[in-house]
Length: 306
Image (cartoon, rainbow, N blue to C red; front, top):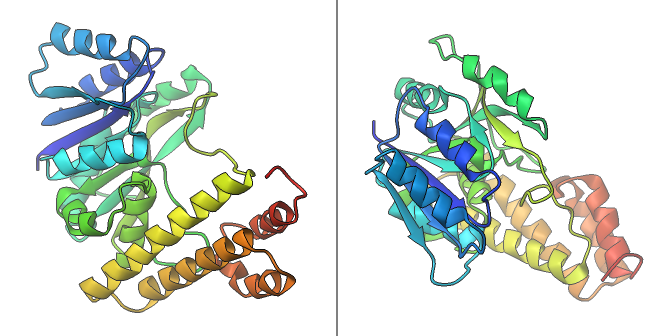
């Protein structure tokens, strides 16, 4: 199977060369690497161009946006442009173990019904933690975990640890809002359809630093409302995908509940009342975590930053 690696970059001069090097050092080389830079103001583009030229990488292509679009639209555009049978999402600041591509491809060859494979990863700020990755090996005795649809938070794995079939991407593109994060969109669609797997082999060092785009808490009212409305829109598209694809049962039920919960949260934050706060308790099982309900109440009541 052919493979594509897609990378969204923005002001990543401090880390991008090491990430590119880890892709070049893969035991199985990707058939194409697509890089889309989002108007970096540092030396990111120059470093990428030099790396590609110095290593004679004719199958690596760099596009520089005319204006800053944000990583969500950037990754969606990259996913649309990919041509490999399996597509690997890649961040600019991590390091891949040598067998990351090989292991995911082997697994998806063995299990053609799986659309999304997420590998384990090491998340830390210590570069030395990446060293054990190079010894990670795949074998026929896979240690993998199927991810069934489950009530509550649909746990979203890091996009940089994902490999997804291009055929699945094309199936979900009509339901993929261009302002929904790529990892959450693909994960939710695969979870709803029961076709996602966590492969318990660590093939990625996720570099933790002050500029990470993931893992940030949002307590500002307007930003939190925008995020909740984004999720409500995305979950509604998952429901539409399930209905159009004939997916019923737990997958459809889960995301109907997730959609209703986010819509109720948005309504409460826009115009909070005691009655709405009480009704929200019925949706508590669909909250990311129980304390998020308390944060919603605190934000709506003006107890934290608006």
